[in-house]
Length: 221
Image 1 (cartoon, helix red, strand yellow):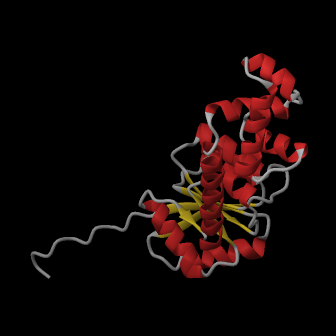
Image 2 (cartoon, helix red, strand yellow):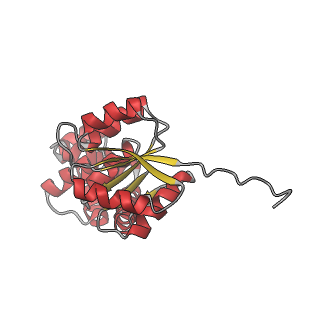
């Protein structure tokens, strides 16, 4: 049509796939390249191959498995965060454990998706990361919320203790007797015993081993 503006070319979002299972890579590639603005520009089967490819092949994102030979995903993430911080990394894994999620995010991953997710979830995750958002599987998000709630509850429990009670908890967990604690704090052993009773009631703790564990968990030793 005369006078019509020329169509702007679609800007490709370039992706490298890093997974030691060729069949899985083929499936992920097929899903990704169904979108006209997404292109898989490379495939590798281990972390070392990934680092070699990234140095030669410019890309916007890496879809990364955590379990790979020679160099695993976490090790590759560490390297990428230092040397290629602008490349977004979407972890695609079978690991549902909270520890893996925390490590991946701490090492710079922008997303954490389980391999059991649907094709639409994968494309949605890529889209979210392109927009500067985090993309995390709903199952893993639930773990984060539960972890946060547990930490908050634990912090509130510590806040129930007075400054004096925290001092006595510290000395008690280190094995000092009521008399020894009293001498350090310039109070009577009977007062120390009263504080100890209050601590046990507030924390629901009965044994010395429970007391020590609580002190360790809350950096009170």
